Amino acid sequence: MRFYVKEMTALTAIFVMAWLFTGSAYADRETYNIYELQISDAGNDWNSYHYAEIVRCVGGIVTHKFKQRFTLQDPSLGTEWAAIEVRGYPVYPTGIEVGDQVDFDNVYVDEYAGVTVLQYYAASSHVINSSGHVIPDPVPVALRNIRYPAHPEDCERYASMLISVTEEMMIGAMDLGKADDNYELIGAADTAWASDYANTDIDTTYIVESGECYGRYIGVLQRYYTEGEWDYYQLLPRGNDDYTPCGTDVGDGIDDICNTAGTLFPSPNPFQVRTRIPFMLAASSAVRCDIFDLSGRRVATLIDGGMQPGYHEVSWNGCGRSGRKLPTGAYLVRIRTRDNDFSGKISLAH
Image 1 (cartoon, rainbow, N blue to C red):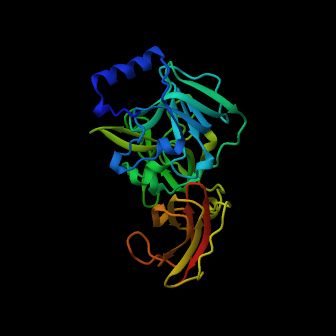
Image 2: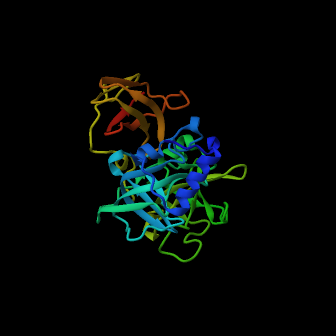
Image 3: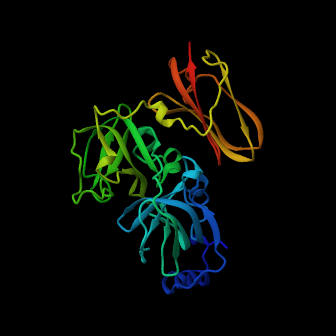
């Protein structure tokens, strides 16, 4: 049973309000994983396809707690659409700590200021299945993919996920955004917004100052949207260890993206005109194939859609999004499916 706010009858609205505030259980709820609740597209205005449903959500590890909110991420779901925010309002779920694997029941799927959230109410409950899990590694993301203003076609797949941006960034203008607590992260070609309001190590508005340089930022990605007023994504560091000043060794870029779950073998490699990338699907799945440069910036997308099981090949001509040939050098090809993540290095020679 699905409720959409625009289609609510008076009777439906009364039922939902009664559930929210009296604590009545909803017997016909469905069970979903985080991917199923979070995935969205432009056709649905980047809202969950389960918006306004009362559901059971399974499979998430708590990656952060801040201001009546939890971020929940399931590393088994891959590197996109794999996290969601739980909002402990009007009832705050107690006993939950970072590293716990938690299932939530009878929670309400809401779109709160641009964020897909699971609202925890009087009828909601949770089960801590296990504790002490290692927090999933941050997903490497280029600054361009979270740039200001909001570009949900690039950003939304990382909503509520723990991500890292590894490139030289300068702190720019401050006191931005709805609460005057956002600031600019200015890279070589793009600018994104961040905020320190989720940093649980500080009791001030900021830990950074304008003009400072950072080589890596880690945090949870959150959107803030109010129609006709604000629309931006903000990177939210969890604590002081999530900021790495410039000049500190932060890894070698492309290797941080590589996932050892599977290896791809492009051929020929190196190549000049065109290379083929074979891969196998055990079952029907959504598939995304991207090319990244050495900094971790996505420069081309070769596949983004559903595919049938069996043997497949995708080819790349060495061109980027603009259709122009990319510079000579090393690149990473990465194929992500519902259940697997494969990568391989590839060399382009002119």
